[in-house]
Image (tube, rainbow, N blue to C red; front, side, top):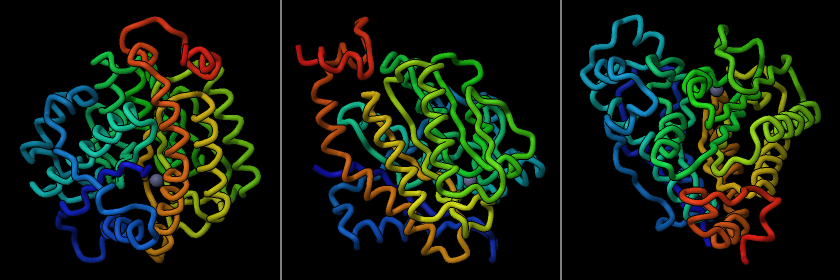
Length: 334
Ligand SMILES: [Zn+2]
């Protein structure tokens, strides 16, 4: 049983020479997954582009019109940090499409991933920090609106606070936005989410692990059992990251991934893994961190899949009133 993966790195867009956005990491990551035997070609899928109607679940028509028709102001383009082009629009729509498809796959199979996504700085009517649309926000709100899920949690461990996701979740009580990040990092004006843990510069593996474990406990206590979780597994809390400020080693990042996988599995919720940022001076480090995350996720597929087969459509939360989470696990077979 393999991890179902959606990719969109074949849709490239023009960048000025020397631009800091690591556009190559997505293609290199896909190659690394195949090289390391983490994925086979048949596990990798190209998504359709997210439609205007799908994007409108999290973004305003005014903002969508500007992005779709290339009418963003120079200030709005600067805030995004990527030059607008039809190719950028296509790429970013495919990225949201990847998360949408991964979410549907996770609901059916327990666990799936997008080799991209985690564009968490995009809010309802703005883009920022290399993020045009908010893939997780769109997928979560669309699935909630369709009644496919009733309670969605975002666990955002990208080193930057998930301000756009927080804004998208603010008007939707069934969506819980948890962000653990470097407090003194971008964005400097943070939009409060449902739970924000801002860490001091240089936070090491042990302190991070303790804070994350505490955050997960608080999130569960406040929100209750989610029936879908999005995990933004940013590579940028790594100690060598140019835009990071935290002090995690690669082993510490693996411990983070393991804790999230363990916890979400214990909650009995399907899980969607998306990448988030990563800005190591040597791109190979960023690719290595993401590949390790996905290798761990791949190892967890059988357990999540066993969960998924125990859950009837009613228990999945589309129709009935059955309780959710680990407490009801024993009853699911009967
Ligand atoms: Zn980031």
